[in-house]
Image 1: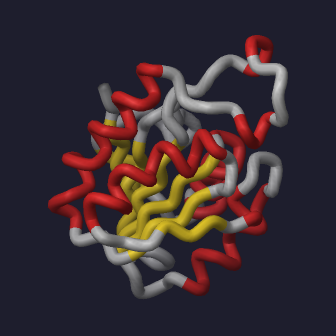
Image 2: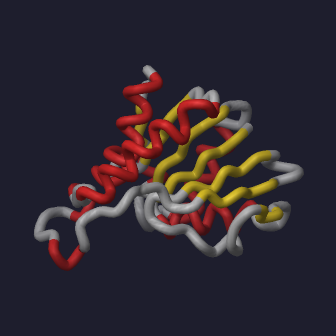
Length: 153
């Protein structure tokens, strides 16, 4: 299994958004990041795209899912603040090549849970996750190698 852990692209700042946080949209830069993700993911033989239901997450991976002809499914266990509930998702997709889009807190907890076996290559420590960036995680659960890809666009 290869996990492509995507932190949602740049969204409007919380203080500038008056609606429900789950509806906070991407900025123009965030939309460029989402479009750049299409070409970056295209050669990676992804079989599934899963996202937090938050608009900023869905809009980050929707362009890739549409271009690849893949259904985009949303999962509440990828919502901001959901903690390690995402580990159940990992067990259910154990044999797939998957894009998972979520929020910084959820993805950092997931990386931390994998860190007992993980070695980070080509990037910072496992506690870094910029908006629009991707950690590619291979070898789950035994020989985990995590590679950081710089923020897109």
